Image 1: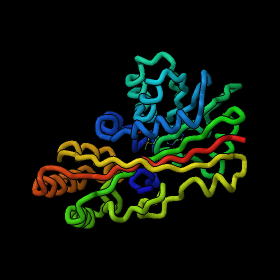
Image 2: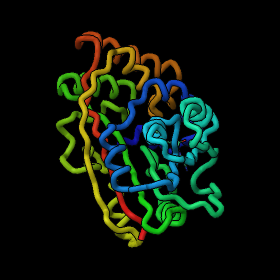
Image 3: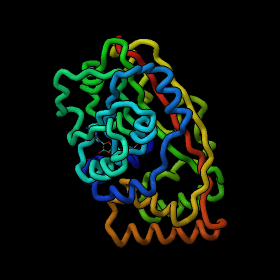
Length: 272
Ligand SMILES: C[S@@+](CC[C@H](N)C(=O)[O-])C[C@H]1O[C@@H](n2cnc3c(N)ncnc32)[C@H](O)[C@@H]1O
């Protein structure tokens, strides 16, 4: 996982202050991924739990299937946008808090899913917390949607701008050629959850999938996307503006946009 989403800073501060921007700019998840999760989970009328729902990028496609959903989200500003995005789905309930502090009471779920969030949770407790809130046989679905740059020349130009501005990580840090074939292999040292899950030992039927999509961003949309990413959020305003202006100039010189490869990588497991 690109650490652009995991700087050593409070997620509530980083995501919350850009909730609207995040919602407008961030890409969603492949439809095929949602279908794969639901086919695996065979929920029936059991409810699902979403951890770290953000503004609802993954919530909405699940809610649209009529699934009763509890969404846990620690940032009140993200939660507010989430409520707005899900108001037409009466089965969605938003609860503000971190997963580690959240109180499920006697509630148990047929599915727990976390979209671009599992890596934010307490490593020492997350498997136990997930196992506790799942029904026996309930499903765990963890997924991410990193992206990379298809054009290697453009990638090199962007890397040069980032170096100049001291940006160590961004959505365009990797050329698509750096991605391997396996889920979680994004050209850096992201820990795909399978190893930890096997070590935990209480989950069965472990599966991993990759879905691929090529997406073109116009310059303006791509800049909004960058401005919603934590690496850029934490820069002083003048440095952020300069970095974004240089990036815009380069994209405009490359036909007015950027072609990216989105992968949606999915990990599934069943609570024993
Ligand atoms: C990269 S965003 C992903 C949001 C959304 N799931 C999506 O895919 O667009 C990570 C989310 O995890 C949330 N988060 C961070 N730490 C968390 C925790 N301990 N418990 C629950 N959610 C957490 C953040 O507030 C943020 O909304």
